Structures are given as C-alpha cells and as structure tokens.
Length: 407
Image (cartoon, rainbow, N blue to C red; front, top):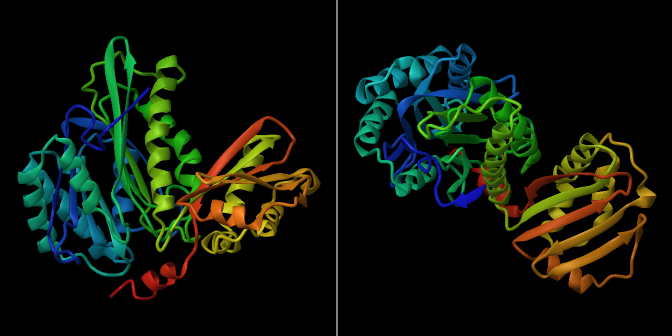
C-alpha cells in the first residue's frame, strides 16, 4: 500500500465540486458534490440513533435495494433531521434536480446533510446550489479538497486521505473525505464520511470491507458522547481501475481492506483531534489483552471519560481517572497488573507499575501532556491482543461553541 495525496477525487473517474448556496452560512461554501463517470456499487453504514435524519433514511433505502449510485449531494448548516414528510420530500427534490442537471437516474443520487436539527432546508437555494455544483465539477485534487471544506460545520480543518495498491499490474485507489467535530461518539460512524474507489469489486466484498473497518475506526472515536441523527459513511466503487474482480476472502480483498482501513482510520483520527474546542488529539492504547473485544472495551471506556479528557485539557497527570474508567468499562482485568504510560513528541513516561504510582516527575508529565498529540498506553499483561481509541481534550471551548450553536 502507498499513501498518496488527495481525497474523493484521487480514484479514477471521480469528480467533485463545492458551491456557496447560502443554505445557512454566508461567505463560505456550504454544498458539495461527489460524482462518478460510471455508476457505482455502494455500501453504507448509518447511525444507530432511533432518531434518523431524512438523508439517512434516503441513503439506507438505496443501499438496501442494491441500486447503483453516481452522485452524492451534501449540504452543511442544516441537518434535515426531525423534519417529517417535508424532509423526505426535500431528499426527493434534491435527487430529481441532481438527476436533471447531471444526466443520471434519480435512484442513483445519494444525499447527505449536517448542521442544525429541526430546521427545514431552503429547497430553492439547494436546487440553485446543485446547478452550480454541476457546472463546477472537476477530477482534480483541489476540487476534492474544496468539497471536503464545504461539508464542514464547526470543524476547523478539512479532512481527507487516499492510498493506492497493486493488483495484477493495475493500480487501485481508495480516497475519502469526512466531517465531524461535535456530536461525536463511537456508536457506528459519528459523522459524515464519503469514500471512493476505482476498484472492480463484488458487492459482498465492498460491504464486508466497510463493515469491518468501521468497527476499528469510526466506532473507536469519541468527543462528547453524543451519537448524531445524521451519521453516515458511504463507500462507492466504479470499477474504472479495470483490475481483476476483488472477491471476499481473497488475498486481493485483504489488500483492499488495508487501504480502506488506512483511509478511514486517518479520517477518524482527524475528526477526533478536531473535536469542538479541542487542543489535543488523545489516543488510548490497551495492550496485553486477552482478546480484541476486551482491549476495545477498555480503550473506549477511557476515551469516553469526561474526567480523563478534562485532565488532558489541564495537562494534569491524573492517572487515577484512567484506571477508574477502565474499571467501569465492563471488561474484567486485574488492576494490580496494570502498567501505564504517557507519551508525546516531548517523550515517554511510565506513570504506574502493577497498579501503583511510580516516583515520576510531574513537570515532565505536564510537558508530555501539553503537546498536540498525546498517547496513553495501558498494558494489562494478560495476552497478546491490543486496540486503540481516539478522542480529544475537553475544554471551555466546547461549551462556548455549543452554548450558542444555533446562532
């Protein structure tokens, strides 16, 4: 696998565009298009929240029916959630307008929305935006980057990644973009993610691969413990790499999954580190576990701990909060065997050994915890499995952003 520059337009045959439609924001782009020259097989995973936004229901229907897709229309600023029949009507109107200006089937149009819950979409502005997107679409990398910026809400930076690998002399590419900063919690993907590939791949392999990598990427991040109404991850494959078909369970499938994992893990970590008000990406690693399940449960419990996240915000080596979060995770382990380490570009420091504090330097610990990426590693010394989860520090900035989000 080779990491390359780019996002949703990195794979052959994909184009993208951004437009300023004035849906909610002024003076910035707020609509994005992802378009494929050829119809795509599509896989998707969606929020487990019982309250599902209209675009989630729309996309779920397309994925469930196995219809091929050729375009994705996304708006930021308004979530089109809790909008009743009118919200579903807007999805249909979006697909109809996109089909007209792009020359594709209405059933081939996927939709996505992110922003304030409960507001109705200004459909005429959205339709005008679709026309702008259609005229601006391009396969260049900058167009992909522009699209990644257009779907941002409280995000402070665009999020995209891409990688390639070889199959029988053919280069296959996987690229993607995502958005997510608040209302982020590991419970199916907690954000919007759009991933494209030019691979020739069976529908079964496509769906299995996405389902597999979601468990170790989007489901392992948390910012604030809130699972969104709009969580969507879509994977589109147009087959334009012309490789021999990738089938589930083969060596080629594992190569594809490796690239897909890289792209989605990169996007997941970018979202975790860009949490609302965050100053640091927090990574929690559990090593020496009896099973992957045990390691993941422990890591997720720590990453979801508000007390741990506020300690990181204060650069305070309050390791008791970490051990406490592991203790209420529901996973069994012996706390008197745990070794705990803090690590960043400022160095690595062991804090506890066999569950007891070591005589470490508080000054050095504070220096380590003051960096933009901090890793907490807990070795529970029970086996050979490990897992990682990602989040961020919890600061006053999170309250400031969310206290007046609608204004």
